[in-house]
Amino acid sequence: MHKLYLASQSPTRQQLLASTGIPFATISHSASEEVDPHPDPKTYVLSISRQKLEHVQLPPGYPGEVAFVLTADSLCLDATGRYHAKPVDRADAVAQIKALRDYGRVVTAFCLAKRQWDNKWVTLDCHEDAVIVEYRLDLPDHWIETYLDRMPLALQVSGGYTVEGYGAQFCKSINGSYSGALGLPLSELRNGLEQLGFWG
Image (cartoon, rainbow, N blue to C red; front, side, top):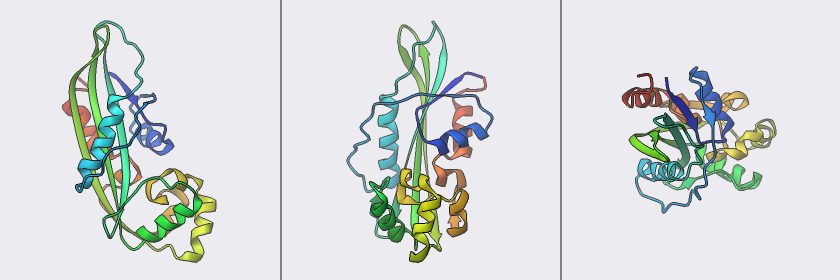
């Protein structure tokens, strides 16, 4: 098993990856995450994740060392096709929840790079994937403030809603990868790691 670096400060992504039992270290990236919107949701979110991968702050290795680097990003779409990123404030979170609760989609993409140290990190191979998860909420107006009080994490996630913890009681239905809805599709990630020889 090689070393895996997760370039994300998201507590949820870190918890999801930890649940797989794969040891990893967290690193930062310097990407602006400003990418021109694309009509295809997967293409758009993948481009953001790819930009993060290009700007990871990876520590130096030793000659011949192989390491894997993982980046991910999520956005939400409402029924009109409008994209929703992380809320800028509480009022924006309320507006996003209202826009998405009848029908929303979470688009999560990840990029995985296999790199080797040769006086610098050289990319040997890459794997990319993206999932779309549909959801509907039963979160009426008079519950939104309580939800936000109990789930401060909501201000750090696209769409202002997360299905984990206290938020689970407001999820009427979900269609697709549960871990993908949270920000990291674990089944697809495991397949990507296998394809790149992580356990080889």
